[in-house]
Amino acid sequence: SGHVICRVLRGRPKDLGLPEGTDSRFVWRGVASADWGLHSSLVLRYSETHGGEIPMEPALGTYEQTVLEEAREWGLDWHSAGGRLTALELSAALQHYGVPTRLLDFTFNPFIAFWFAVEKQDALDGRIFAIDIANQVVAREDASSDQPWWLATDSGTTSEWSTRPWIWRPPPFEPRIVRQAAAS
Image (cartoon, rainbow, N blue to C red):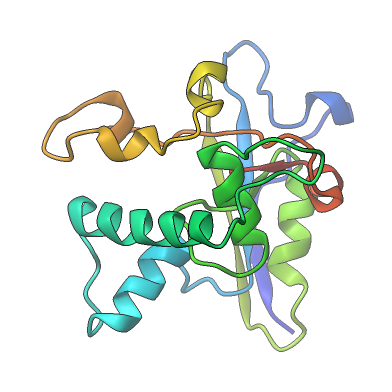
């Protein structure tokens, strides 16, 4: 049996993840191996197909654009209730079906992250990441774009999009998103 090291915050359930007296708000990610870092499936797939190389942003953006364009060519960017999926929604839908994207699954619930860290019985040591997302939520106008606006950011700059982690709470278009208090 493995080990998971994490600090459990005490307090009322609605207060979990909100340290008192600060503007902090956390999202959590549990992984089954303490050796795993924070790499998206897009980075990992690129690395697998390019001899272990971790991509720089221009190469990753080109790779991601290819994935999104192919999904649109296949007509996968339509919502079952009608209308087109935004670029973030399309990425979330593709990720749900195992297609590599730059999104990383997080949750607003630390107990769900803990479950993912211990779910595999053959895992040796799990790991839980906690990221403070205060003032780092993707704005509605950005989230509603059908184009991947993040690809337009010049990777050579120190813009806020390229130097900080950002969080997006997907709409509940899939029951799993609701059950897991999902964030990406």
